[in-house]
Amino acid sequence: MMARILQITDPHVVVPPRLVSGRLDTARLLQSAVARIKQDWARFAPIDIIVVTGDITDDGGEDSFRLFRSVMADLPVPVLVIPGNHDLREPLRACFGDAAFMPPTGRINWVHDLCDLRIVGLDTMIEGQGGGVVDSGTLEFLSDALAESGEKPVLIAMHHPPFASGIAFMDAIGLAGIPALAGVLSQAKAEVRIICGHVHGTIVGTVGGHVAISSAAVCSAFPADYRRDAPVGFTINPGGYMIHSWDGCFRSAAVSLGDADGPHPFQTPETA
Ligand SMILES: [Fe+2]
Image 1 (cartoon, rainbow, N blue to C red):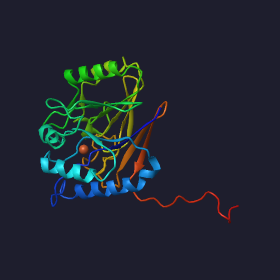
Image 2: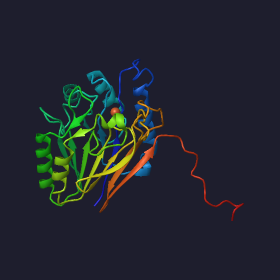
Image 3: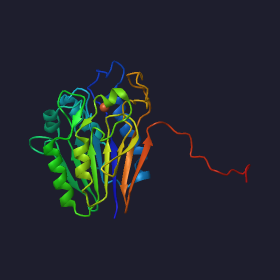
Image 4: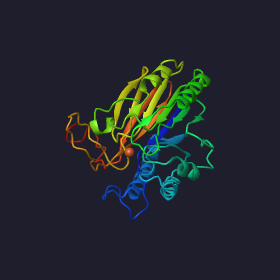
């Protein structure tokens, strides 16, 4: 009983020489994240699949999606994607039209079964808006996907977290429909974990009795700041990604993309 998923979120890719917010070369940031993930790969292998939880592009352009896909092709396992609020559904569908998970029309909700784990992607995007929604069709899709999974554990991927972040400017563009989502999730027979992006930081919450986690982004960070007049903007940090494992229970590890010094031994000849 073993499954392992690598999660990347919010790369916000644009085609150079464009910069996001006049300062972020997001294509280069994704390239360096992918290079780092390749270096880290042996630490976490075997990894079954990569899930990217939205804001794949900053502008929704098909050329941006294609650039994203070509950078990700450097990694040795398939990539599953769901849209975020910065994406556009049809260019995303066109770019991944040959992928088995991609539905031909409608919301980009999908199921991908590994041997020991079911992964469910939910599309919370309202095109042209920052906030998201779990609409009735998506709820029905989730309800069916949970019922069919039986006792198999389920990892749900969605862009907007199903909890408030406490960061005012992000909660103003949060998720609608959380109580109904919680109702469906509370009926699940199997263990469920929810993974998401959007808030560009690692936050753990709960929904319907299950743990939900947002990951650090690849391109920028929104610092936790619960003041009502918290500065609206982003910081430039090394960013990170997550490794979600199932081996009889869920385990989620946040991995920094920053440089670390070490590991150093606990004991040296001088301290012995
Ligand atoms: Fe984002």
